[in-house]
Amino acid sequence: MSSDTGDRSGPTALSASRNQSSQSGVKLSQTQQRPGKTTESGDQNPSGYGLSGDRRTSKPELGSSTGRKFNRSVVHPNGYVGFSDLPNQIYRKAARKGFSFNLMVVGESGVGKSTLINSLFLSNIYNQEYPGPSRRAGKTTKVEEMRFSVKEKGVTLRMTVIDTPGFGDRIDNNASIKPILDYIEKKNEKYLNSEVSHQRTRMTDERVHCCLYVVPPTGHCLRALDAHVMRTINKRVNVIAVIGKSDTLTAEECERFRTQLDKDIRENGINLYTFPDVPTEDPVARRHNEMRNRTPFAVASGTSVIDTVNGHPVKGRRYPWGVVEVDNIDHSDFLVLRDLLIRTHLLDLIERTAVTHYESYRKDSLAKVSDSKSTERSPMNQFADVKAEHQLKMKKMESDMEQVFISKVREKTGKLRESEVELERKTQVVRKSLDDDVKQYENKLRSFEKEKLEWENSEQALEEANKRDILDSSGNLNRKKSTLGKLFQ
Image 1 (cartoon, rainbow, N blue to C red):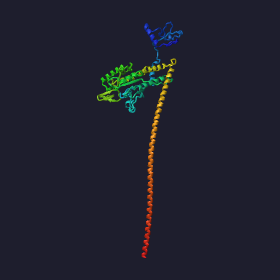
Image 2 (image 1 turned 30 degrees about the vertical axis):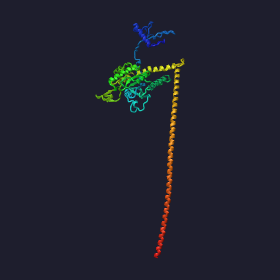
Image 3 (image 1 turned 90 degrees about the vertical axis):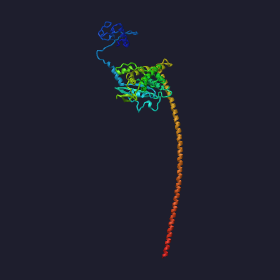
């Protein structure tokens, strides 16, 4: 509690006061007497707060580097004040605001990353409508994000799962790590720019809090690619090594492989995330917390519910020789991994990212700013110069991309023109063929009209000849009739 002298008592002064009291063998110092007791000057102190409540305390002289500090060890109020409800206030605020957790999953195709994510959150995040990366037709090394929210007992967890579908699937995998590093650096840079921005209230934490590196169950040793990637990214993110599809190994093979991986990780100087000891009242979580050093975790995940021999439904996988239970610690470390990752150490992963990895990136970024030529300028101005330089670089990249786009457009336009010329040529051929057909049909029509006219003329001549014959025959008949008439007369 502060007096008129302007001095403040803090944890350091309180610790010094306690140490001094313990060394002198006195339970309470004269500056920590209870209400109604006589102070060192002999005056009655009714305030009960030592000399800090005495208004007659003289001010220290100006310019003096030392001042008197008045501390009390513990003050017990006589009634309910209300500050004991602060943890409940923090809980209500945190539950209302929710939490954000960004999880990166790295591993080659077919090691069970999609099934592991579905099992971690007991949801069909990857399904038939949105299949896992290993089941897609076109796989690239481009980093993909999938955002969703998980609600449990009124608490919302905003999840971002980051995956690299084509990691480790090429013959030459030297460039497989570049998209991963670029993504992590991009998110750290975005958060750093948000910190120096004038609208810090809109900051969104998109930094990668944890990386689950799924090692294929080869049963031999750590591959050079896996060692290189983990050794490189552990400086920027919390890395947890996981043996995927451990049910393909026997118990002896799995234990030997785990021991060999742990040895290779130490020899390669890879600093994996170490789970600190977190006190918990849950006996199951306490048991899993005791198994936190059992790394790398041998995980067999699955979401299918099957019946065992005893008729109990369990989540697992069925094989000809038996059933692998996902939630059985004797079969898989999945339950231990999920409890350590989400139930007991999720906040520690977020804090470790902010305090260790992001601060390392921030220090390196600001160190580049401090190495500029002008040492008298403020760090903010130097950072602005670096930002302007970065913007110029981005503009140059945009210009290069624009030139590439223009060249692509020109190439496409040329192809379209060639297609148009070819189409015009084909059109001319078809048109000429149609013209020839029309001429042929016109010639046939004229020939038909000519034949028709000749046929009509011949028919008319034949009709006239028939008429003449009829007239001639009728004249002859009349003459014969007149001759016969004359004869009979």
